[in-house]
Length: 165
Image (cartoon, rainbow, N blue to C red; front, top):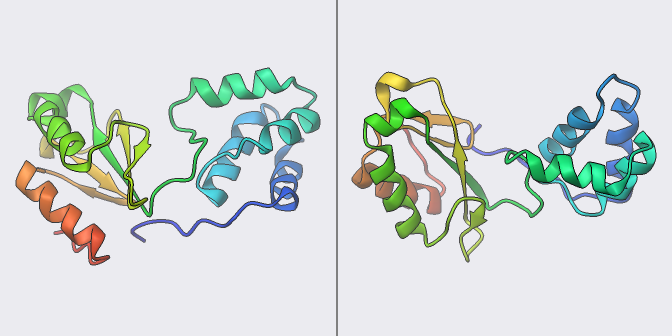
């Protein structure tokens, strides 16, 4: 699977996801993950539903969402691209790749290209330290990514081919 298929949220879907997990200890994070896994992001409208169900304030729920960089509050692009920022990848050229990626896409981390194709996210280790710099596109991890290889990956993403060797 290259990119997950997300589903449009409805109040009913959000409440079903919340109800399925609200009785677990520490339910807030599992609920947020479930919503983002299903919808691609945590819609603003989920905050009061979660707060009411867990007897928390909206500020407490929002605080957790904003604290963890993993959670999105806007819909992702068709492709989610993560660039590894861990030290091992940095030692192998990730900083230069990161600058090329941002310049090529015209976005910064936590942003989506104007055409809604690619959302750029940082990640702090993909577990491929000897093959850095590494990126993840959807569920695929690609190592030894040069600026030229990145440009090929973008071309493949935008034509929906994405053949990674």
